[in-house]
Length: 167
Image (cartoon, rainbow, N blue to C red; front, side, top):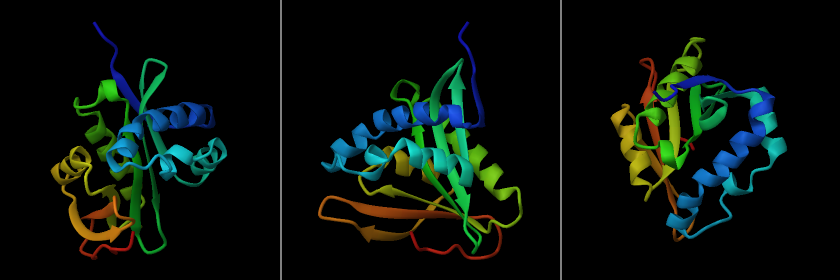
């Protein structure tokens, strides 16, 4: 039988694995938008190491291999921002992205300071948008980045407070 995937907090030893997985996963996004200079493809290892100390970073492992990751922070205004939800291409379409999304939501929402969850995706990234809609997110704004890319901001409320719509 195969191994099961486990989700846990990432450590500094995971930074390089996350960077390599991120580079792999964002190739399809870069191709979709015709832009290989997007931030996930140019982010440095030191930048990821800094995120490990300042935010919540989770990884999903299959044995020793990091096969998925997600990051999140809670702003002073109570907006829990979720970003860079990545799943290895061979592991996609098996529910792992949804599991990671649920886990980071629980982690960010557990302190009581978060009022809503917010994330964004490119307007052509239909698989991502479908996942977020399936998990209760609704579009609350758009921002045109250039002729090829419009970012769609999606939000999901935790409490009765309205979610800030700034990206």
